[in-house]
Every structure is written in C-alpha cells, then in structure tokens.
Image 1 (cartoon, rainbow, N blue to C red):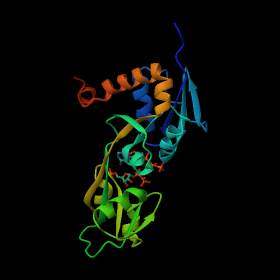
Image 2: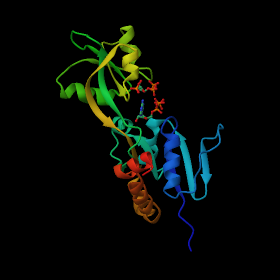
Image 3: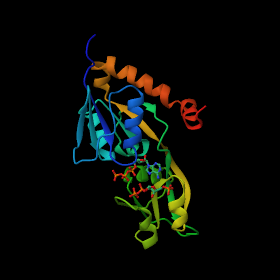
Image 4: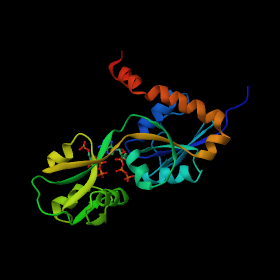
Length: 216
Ligand SMILES: Nc1ncnc2c1ncn2[C@@H]1O[C@H](COP(=O)(O)OP(=O)(O)OP(=O)(O)O)[C@@H](O)[C@H]1O
Ligand SMILES: O=P(O)(O)OC[C@H]1O[C@H](OP(=O)(O)OP(=O)(O)O)[C@H](O)[C@@H]1O
C-alpha cells in the first residue's frame, strides 16, 4: 500500500479551530486538537496544520502554501479571492448585517466595519454614499460612542445587539464555515483531496448534522 500524499491545511485560530479539527478527524485525517503552546504549525501523520488569523486563510490557500483550509464565508467574501469553495460545512452560522442604535433616524453618513469591501458593495447596491471606517473588533462600540452612525457586523444570537440597545436593520450576507481548496492542489493531490471532500460532504450535509445533534 502506498503512503498517503502529504497535505497542508490552513485553519483559523478562534472559534472555528476546534470544530474544524474535530470534523477533519471524523473525516479520517490522523489529527487531534494540539496541546496549548506557542507552536504555529503541527505535523500529524501526513497532515500539516497551520494556525492562522481568519483573514489569512484565503491567502494561504489561494497562493498554494496550504492545499485546503476552513474559513467563514464572511471572511472569504471580504477577501475577494476566487478560491474553489466546494463545501458549506454547516457550522459557525451567523449573518453580516447593517446595525444601528434602536430608533436611530437620519442619514447614514459613516459606517464602521471589519468588512470594508462588503460594506462598500452593500452601500453601492443601495445607492448610499457613506464614509467607511475600518475597525478590528468590538465593532458595535463605534455606534455607541458616535464614531459612526451605523456599523456592519456579525450577528448570531442577537445578544450583543440586545445588550447594547442596537438593532439589525438588514442582513447583507449569511455566513457559515466553508471548505476552500487550492485548484492546483486539487489536481496534483486529487487522490488525497477528493475523498476528503466527499467524506466531509457526507458528514456536514444538513441531515447528518441534525442526526448528530439529536443522537437519532
Ligand atoms: N457570534 C458568532 N457566532 C457564530 N459564528 C461566528 C460568530 N462570530 C463570528 N463567527 C464566525 O466565526 C468566524 C471566526 O470568528 P472569530 O470570533 O474566531 O474571529 P475573530 O477572533 O473576530 O477574528 P480575527 O482573526 O479577525 O481576530 C467569523 O469569521 C464568522 O464566520
Ligand atoms: O449575536 P451574538 O451571538 O451576540 O454574536 C455576535 C457577536 O459575535 C462576534 O463578536 P466576537 O465575540 O467574536 O468579538 P469581536 O467583536 O472581537 O470579533 C460579532 O462580532 C458580534 O459582536
């Protein structure tokens, strides 16, 4: 039997990391959650795992440093990179929305966001001209402090909005974790990557996820 072709996977640190490792292990890769350390990459069997910031995952996969990766659709869309995205992995569901203080009136003149490209596309589509301010975190604070009169940010349960007297005015994009694959790797390492994609497809189909949750 020939040994498996080595593959490199890009995973984002943060809330997507653990579930990604668990899913990839379930799909048959010889990986486990790494022990906490300052290491940035791990070799596990034929798999090398790279731990990156979310927005760097599309860059590593697009440039072929990683053969495949997992990243939120929000970050992938913001990257503007046309990467092959064969699968919706059906976790980390959230939405990117336009948010204002409850009852805010008056024109939107300045919008703060971690997603300036998606915000610009949204404003253009709506025929609105507003200044966009790029921020890096706790975006909702921009509205609360008067830095901007609206923000474009992620909403999941809505608890951050409720706790800060904010409301979601319009959903711009629905997001979930996606598998992304480098097109050249898919050709050169198809024996390794094609079966992996198919196993992940089976594991993450909506029916499979429902069964996993209910235990049925
Ligand atoms: N509250 C949420 N509920 C579910 N999914 C979320 C939520 N917030 C973000 N996500 C999804 O998980 C991805 C990673 O979020 P995470 O909070 O780990 O990133 P971050 O730490 O804000 O990113 P950065 O690397 O820019 O610091 C997001 O891109 C989005 O797709
Ligand atoms: O609707 P909710 O369930 O409250 O989730 C939404 C919040 O989750 C994310 O923030 P995160 O905790 O990742 O912090 P960040 O703002 O630093 O990215 C997002 O930016 C919202 O603030």
